[in-house]
Length: 247
Ligand code: PEP
Image (cartoon, rainbow, N blue to C red; front, side, top):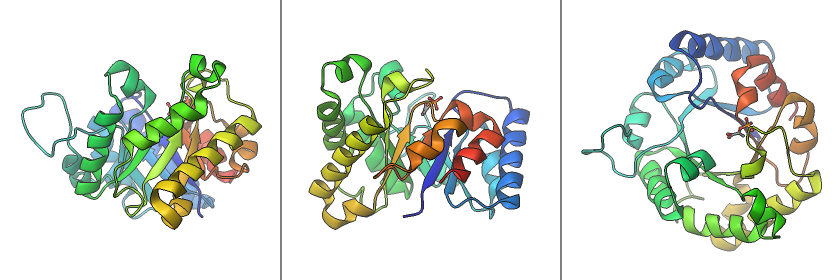
């Protein structure tokens, strides 16, 4: 399957920075079209600008979160139909920073993923263990439990994406070993096939956590690694494109 390289810009940059980053990604991808599909997820206030700049350029744009309700009295929140309305095609859900900073549990992520599907957005659902859970030998149990609790029934039919992001590898420069990544991606694949049958084989499983140009090739070559969710390195267009070029 065609790999997906997704950039999570988090809460970084100004309007000007995000416009320049989008333009640099557009130019770079146009000059050297990567084998991978590209997705960028800017901060909400800049999403429409980036979506317009990338329209028709073969680079998808996504939100970093959405509310479970389509509309209502939810101050500060953004709905899935709003994201769709301004040009998003994807939405990251259940990122560990949302799970930790906003108390989002699997049930909350499931409700948001249902909302994304209802709005016609592709959910990119993040799962991943803490360092203590990995050291206790519970990584696989935690991750498969999160999948069971966070993925809606319509996930596979909509081409949903799973992002495996060990919490301790995000923004730390540390990554699991290649064997550890391959093992847990294999377990995620098995869980997707058990839940969704043959459709589960066609779903992308991204690795996320300190992916950079220097380690991308080795990670992206592992079985059942169908792309990457990239945080820090996605803020530098050349690095993001180098990761995409490593597929
Ligand atoms: C992320 O937050 O999704 C992420 C993978 O961050 P980083 O690449 O900076 O570790």
